[in-house]
Amino acid sequence: MSSSWWQFFRRWFESYSQLDVIVMGLANSGKTSFVNAVIGKPFSRNSIPTFSAITTTIYKHINNSNYKLKLIDLGGQKRLLRAEWLKYYRSADSIKPSFCCHNITPFNKDIQALVFVIDVSDKFSLPAARKLFREVLFDTEADQTPMVVIGNKIDEVTENSTFLGVKLSDIQASQSSTKNRNFLGKFYSNRDQIPDYLADAQPESSGFSIRSSRSISSLRKQLYGRINIFAEFLGLELHPDMSISVKLDESTATTTNASESLQPLTRELDRDFAIFLTSIKEGDDIPDIIDWILGEMDSRP
Ligand SMILES: Nc1nc2c(ncn2[C@@H]2O[C@H](COP(=O)(O)OP(=O)(O)OP(=O)(O)O)[C@@H](O)[C@H]2O)c(=O)[nH]1
Ligand SMILES: [Mg+2]
Image (cartoon, rainbow, N blue to C red; front, top):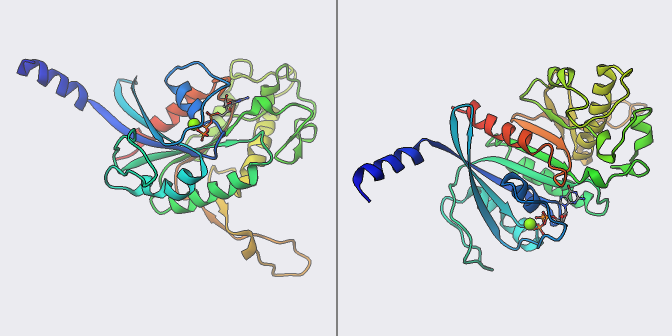
């Protein structure tokens, strides 16, 4: 290759900002489906469990900027995820865990974002998902690593079922929805101005179906209702000023007065954080999730 061609390619590659993102969560939560959706592969019901870390690189050109996004799908199988994920997160160099693997791709030690996927339709795995989520949250807190939590598979949550233990009929009241997926909130982030975002949201185009007589503020309430339930389940508190606090270990709850209910201790979450309740299968929110992650890169020095 002539040197001018080489220089051209070098410049082209160097114009890309690289962003390494770990995608994690329990087995069967939808991590590989998420990565596939990002690269435009069709959704598959019969996806094969991932037994090693798989890196997928995509190039995005958004707002006159070039991005090289590396998604590292850490298989959710127990032996990999629980024992090894921190090594991936912290490792300086390529790590080849003891149990395998020739197909692990070395990656940059600087993980710039975490995507944590939870299957909200599977009540049996939810306690373990919550536990792992909180371990990851605390383990990465000091680095202030931006984090996106995806509450996945809302298409499986039907109107007659409960959502994280709450009867949907109690939270959606008179909302009219034509499709199951329409009744769950989309997105909360302590970085973006969500109240404005929701106020501006066009219910029909953003996947929500409401009676035209219903006001945006009641839509907003419903959205927050569902996001709040999910946040509460995760041990988080969402505040109107967009800050988020994390409830510390419930066992440390204290009471000052016998008549007061138990108040868990809380601490403000000092990192960019977003929650999506969505269906990766439907795929509608995938561009928003990627935008949020890339927006994170833009806002960093
Ligand atoms: N209904 C529904 N099913 C989904 C959705 N996302 C993923 N699935 C299904 O959930 C199953 C597991 O999806 P995967 O993406 O393989 O899960 P994973 O987290 O990569 O699992 P491991 O590789 O074992 O850690 C597959 O059958 C998917 O088709 C969704 O939004 N809705
Ligand atoms: Mg997988």
